[in-house]
Image (tube, rainbow, N blue to C red; front, side, top):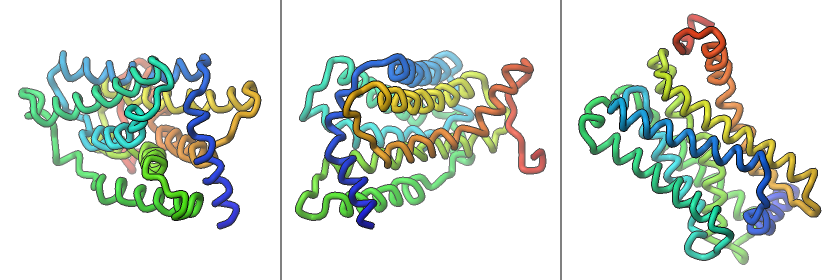
Length: 249
């Protein structure tokens, strides 16, 4: 427990410094992959006017991630780039949720029966508990900071936010191209950020490691691994993108 407290406390102490991270090719590519994934999904909704195969619950989780992580928009200015990207993520994710849940004819094509993962119960609540425990272990009551707690919560939640979407795709099996591209670029964004961390650790003097962030980033990337395999296989074969059932494995 003492070792865990040291790791978490080190993360809390150096988070603000690393928030001002310098730009590099991996970070830029990761950010652009994230932005492109959002553009692809918005294009799917606006042009096809169809939400079949899309999980609103995944986007509700991501909105929760962005809102709790980017509260520093009101307290700290890092750069115009940083602020614009944060506003873009929050605004575009909220727009996706609103479009699917309230705008016709898209609303009628959303299949609630397939999007049934209990995200508040099995994602938000557990992540909130783990975040609270790790924050208390690392900081204690005397150094308790709500902003820091919410930031830690967002890191845990982001690592599993894609789960409802992966479950929906598994149930549909046949994945629409733009939806598949959205998930692929979301996974690529996280993988590129892992490369960004490795690059910074080797090039920035005094770079401080965030072990909880590393663990969650790797976990998030691993959740995409099976999807990546079948996505690349489909692209190489030129066929329709289908996910296997348990009987196919």
